[in-house]
View 1 (tube, helix red, strand yellow):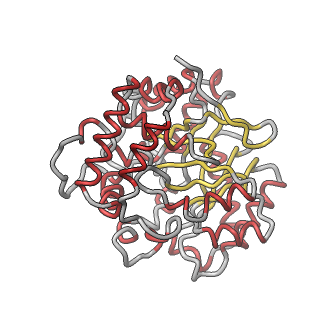
View 2 (spheres, helix red, strand yellow):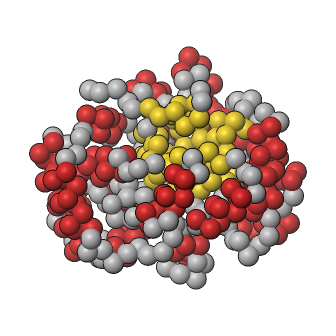
Amino acid sequence: MSEVERHEIAPGYAISRLLKGGWHLSSGHSAEVDRDRAIKDMAAFVEAGITTFDCADHYLGVEQMIGDFRRAYPSLAGEVQVHTKYVPDFEALATLRREDTERTIDRSLRRLGVETLDVVQFYWWDWSVPGAVEMALVLGDLVRAGKIRHLGATNFSTGQLAQFVDAGVPILVNQLQYSLVDNRPEARQADYCREHGIALLTYGHLLGGFLAETWLGAEEPQEPYANRSLVKYKLIIDDFGGWALFQELLAELARIGARHGVGPGEVALRWTLDRPGVAGCIVGATSTRHLQRNLSVFDLRLGDDDRAALAAICERREGPAGDCYELESDREGRHGRIMRRNQNKLEDRPWPG
């Protein structure tokens, strides 16, 4: 088994190129998670070399859970990089003050049990409400104060991201959705980030679990879905060209995987890792069940024939169209209507322990 690849995204700051995602552990994602088991699983990921965790202030309970892991495994805590997010609630944007931002960052520090947050990725729900750039500059002040090491952005269009850069906000990383099925970053944003030295951290490569053998040849699923990820990514599949085209892609991924001794998901993940500018891929996991499969991507090398076969199918795509996160930002659209925009206030409730 190859060692986990690492990427230095700033002098002295390196991450594992697979990041352990936290959304799937959130109590707002699906059925309740076995918290003690999840904490033990975090240790297994770190011991395997996946040392970078992704979470958010509004992933219900996850910052606290990672903090509890750090306290339970102090010998491993020093090896871990934690990337969280600052996502003020939609209903709070119009009245948001500097002290509100500082208070939320302080809460993340307490929950994670650290003196400095490694990376904070910022998101602003509605650009018709003024204040996004000003609040990002507040985060920059907190970098200088030592509360945050590096700043990132997530789920902005290219024009929105450019406003931060033009204002002098030191954006180091940009987290966005990027996969064989959703190639919107290739329209504008991937090039922009390369030009400005911003590393890409990507999610959505496995479409919430749809890119797996269990869905090959399966009937098109219908609502209700088992969790929030399937709700979200079924819409992306519909935009891509529907279930039939997706099945063609999944079958080709399975054929390529069989030649290399891996599954279709590992092929899709390797494809994204190999895209220009991608520093790391976030993989959601509620357990260690797929850990060894995830690690197998570091032994996988796709050939030109593999990429050509995938491109031949993806060239027939119908979408999703537009710049990054434009569809999701339309509150009246199919993608926007499923978003939960006011979860941060729920994080003020103590997480049961």
